Length: 138
Image (cartoon, rainbow, N blue to C red; front, side, top):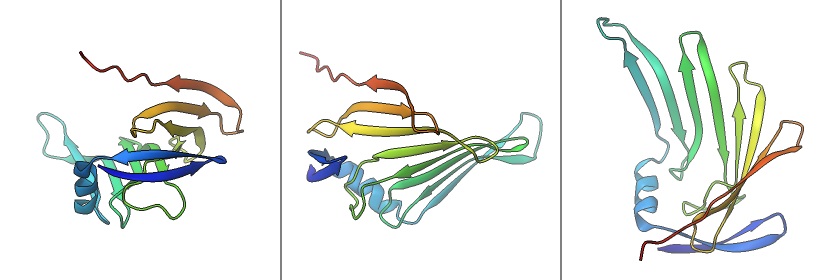
């Protein structure tokens, strides 16, 4: 496991990322993945999804398409100056008109698992909080 320190909003937390994650990111450096769909009985393919990765192999944008064009778009942000081992600290979700509809901020446990997801309206007001509980089988 790779371990690093992440500072969010004035506090710091240690995070771990599996070596498998680091290897996946190495293979995705600068990659764009386009997903195409074809209706049964048709030969015409249409664009369904586009996922873009940065030069470190981290997912930075995911766009979902519908017959009319862009359905939604999510932009992922990582800590300033972080490396391949960084976890997403914020996601901005856009609608079909490319207008912000939700902002998600993430907090992590020391083992790297998600601790909390804070969902905000575009005006910055807190909408909801999702708490993650990790339970190990005995």
